[in-house]
Structure formats: C-alpha cells, structure tokens
Image 1 (cartoon, rainbow, N blue to C red):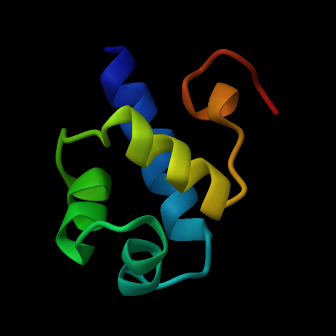
Image 2: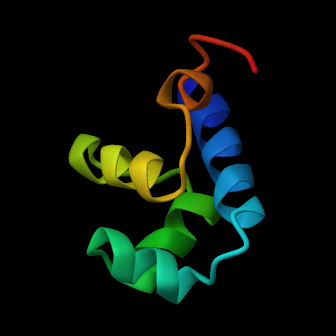
Length: 70
C-alpha cells in the first residue's frame, strides 16, 4: 500500500515539474525510460536516485514518503 502512495506522489511531482522526461533523466543520471517507469509502473527509484530526484526537482522527501503533509 505504501509503495502505491509513494508512486502516486512521486509521479505527480515529476509530471508537475514542468521538465521533460529526458531532462529529468539527464539531471539524475538515469535513462528516460526509468523516469517513465517511475510514473507508470510499480517501479520505484533506488534510494540514491530518489535523493537525486528530490534535490533536482526541489521535492520534500518527507512529503513523497507520506511522513509529512504540505
């Protein structure tokens, strides 16, 4: 259940970032296909990739993980 929640929030934030999948992928060092998988499949990023996503997209990890609300 928690994974679905994290995936939903992460997918929304990626979509709302205003950046293309290719640009996000370049910034964090993964393939564009991986970014698409984070949004559309049950696949979640590894911890180091998650940290890079949060930094590059200015995301609050606690919000994405459901620890805190906005």
